[in-house]
Amino acid sequence: MPSFDSFVQTRVSLAVPRHFSFWRTVYSHGWCTLPPFSVSKDRHVFMCLLRLNDGALVHCTARVSKRGIDVDIRSRDVLTPTQRAEIRRQIRTCFRLDEDLSAFHAEVRKHRSYAWITRSGSGRLLRAPTVFEDIVKMLCTTNCTWALTEVMVGNLVSRLGEAFADGMRAFPTPAALAGASEAFLRKEIRSGYRSPYLVEFAERVASGEVDIESWRSSPLATADLFNEVRSIKGMGPYATGNLLRLLGRYDYLALDSWVRSQFAEVHHNGRRVSDRTIERRYEQFGEWKGLFFWFEMTKHWLNDKFPF
Image (cartoon, rainbow, N blue to C red; front, side, top):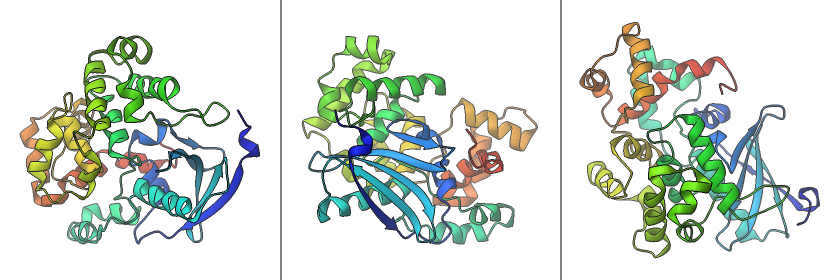
């Protein structure tokens, strides 16, 4: 396998929208720590390994620049104009650069106590290049610690992902995951009860039975899209609500034990309250309540450039 340093180097630059913070988006939630995403705190860069439509793998290193975001690309071959355009599109997708959040920030302006959201450049949630990757990772967050989530996703990439260079691997394709047995997933991936769900889901995607990638631009009402996502085994209300945020729908709070505890600390001096009490507090924000809720629960992350 060729050395990473011997690959072709290319740079592209991306303009960013108003009220955008590179690091607040990278650290909007834990996806930045799950391969093939990573952060170099020493170099102050975000890195990812992308698979292009033609099957080519490219490694991208993104950093803040005067232009917005500079992306240094390593590829086995000289990139074609089509490939460069696709890399731009995938990076813009991950950072949500084309999502219009002007209505969200207009809502923020109505609530002075939340003005810090706009000031800090918060509002965009990092996501994977594909809905498939987001769903697999979301399934790996259910009913477990974050440490186990990292183990499962790391194992999926290292055991089933295509090799690139210097130990780096891409996220598994639907076909690669569909080709794994439930026993393999239980033993090698440590995915436990999720194993049959992961195999069945990958089989449905690989066969074309479900078109999950269209969900990012779905015309369905949010409640109907919620039901579509729930049709995937293992995607309960929490996982579905979280995934909807990555699809640009913010109508659900996606309550789990961690955010319930955070809400208690932020608003009730550590005293637990009912889910209905939590829901009532954020009803005033309408279709944006999921964003207001998530950023308020993670406001303490603003204290550090690299909060985790």
